[in-house]
Figure 1 (cartoon, rainbow, N blue to C red):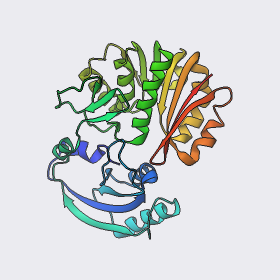
Figure 2: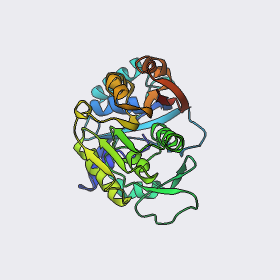
Figure 3: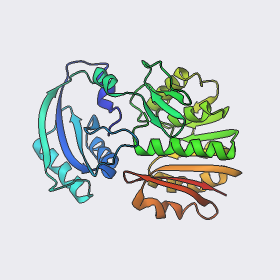
Length: 305
């Protein structure tokens, strides 16, 4: 995917490592799922070569690169077959190339690639080394880390646009961000004057990155980051965001429905367009769909009572 891969984070601690790089041609809408399969198969991290900005013309297919410490040709072929069976390969399904590469300094390269960009009407996503501002926009400072979430991916950008609209319409006083990752959604909510925000994630690395980002945005006093499971939270919230995969959204549906206040808004993302009907069947009724957007095959849904 276009956002910082775990390879980049690892390269901060070790330089001049040698990796095996395998490249695959995959449908853009399946890039995240393909990256998950590759990481589960031993990849240290993945990156989409064709990095695009929000609002750019969607790409049908992309080149997905995966990096391994070592991997055999037989193992590559087994991964290729699994991807092909899952519909994760474009064209003829051939592997585009496998070769050994020396770490070129991914952390430095990433800094050159991560430029400020606009999302929605209000947000400007910027790296920590960018200090300029645009009139009428709120800077969200994100330090690239192992937790995905710089706003480039359509699920994150779609969530940010939905948050902007929900806060303008409903004026929430409390919010919950489930699976916070880099913390970008919780930070955006806090920057739009919601002062009671809870953000949870089971990944301690993600929480470390999220807390660092909250400090960069001076929102640490408004966001409570926690590794607690959703089941242990007893409060109700005016705004709930969950940018996670459809399978998990279905599993969490009963709890998320109950935790929403009567006038609240629920923002769901991480849903492929073909999965929308299935996910909605677990939420509506009692909730109703109030807004839906689809970008590059990924849907963002807003629900209310």
